[in-house]
Every structure is written in structure tokens, then in C-alpha cells.
Image 1 (cartoon, helix red, strand yellow):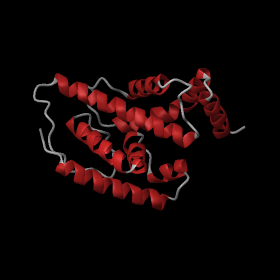
Image 2 (spheres, helix red, strand yellow):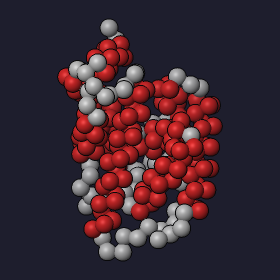
Image 3 (cartoon, one colour):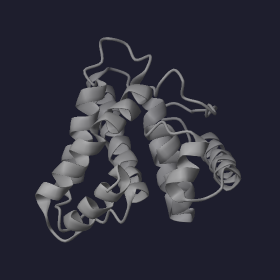
Image 4 (cartoon, one colour):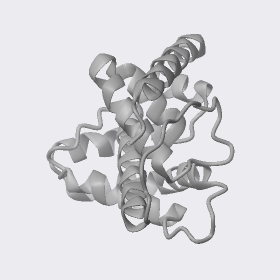
Length: 193
């Protein structure tokens, strides 16, 4: 059986309530998750306590916390969508906590949304503003939100997202462009606090 086939069998078992199957899926995909986390946190200052390993472990706790019986990982693409969402949640929680500990951790107006995250995500008020804009986008079009999560929070390319979602790279690129336009407009409309 191929690795993808093994993962599908394990995901089916996890969906049927087998907690050890979910643990095996996570162990099998750990290196990929760790790579996603490293790309995400690239360029962060060494003073940050959130590193790639911590991000993967915190995301795992969020994934496992759903309970194996509640896990709805139909396939590899769904697993990575959940993982990206869990990583988003961890990063946003971390940024929120850091800002609450700083004096003057007020939100400000974000006016740009880079096409690439080569320098890594910024764990600051921009992240909180982006999270709020993503929540608004999710209410309008969950598929666009998933593309942003996979792109920004999982660090996947349009080609990788297309392969995971079994869609054309062109349609993913269109979704990415639509999502960016929506998010930029939403971020510009959000008043600074």
C-alpha cells in the first residue's frame, strides 16, 4: 500500500473512533507539518517562544482535542485543511497573548497582504487583523478561506493546494486572488483601535 493509501485507511479508522489511528496519521505526516511550521515562522525573532516544533505540537493538541470520533478527515486534503486551520488558531492565539502582555498592544490598520510569506508570518497585531478579516471571508466563502489558510498558515504553494484539493492550479490562483482582494478591502475598512 502507498503512503497516501495508508493515510486514507488511517483517516477512515480515526473517523470511526480509533484514536491510535489519528496518532499514527499525525506521526506519519509530522515532517510535512513541521516543514509547514518552519516556513510559517521563518524570519521570526529569536525572542519568540513559538518555534516550529511548538507550533506542530500545539496544532496536534487542537487536532487531537477534537476527539478521534469527531475527526472528519476524509482524505489527505481535509487533514491538511484542518492542520492549517489548527496552525492558524495557534498562531493567532500566540499573537493575541503577546500583544496582551505588551503595553500599547493596540491594533492598527493593515494596508498590505503580501503574495508570498517567504519571510514568515508576523506574530503581531497584523495577524489579529488578518484573522478577523478571514473570519469575515469565511462567512462569505469558506473555500476561499481554506485557500488562504493553506497558503498562509500551511505555507503551501498554489500548485500544492491544487494537488491537495484535486483542482486546477489556475482555479486555485483565481481563488487566491479573490481572497486577497476581499481581505485587503476588509483590512482597509477595519478601523484601527
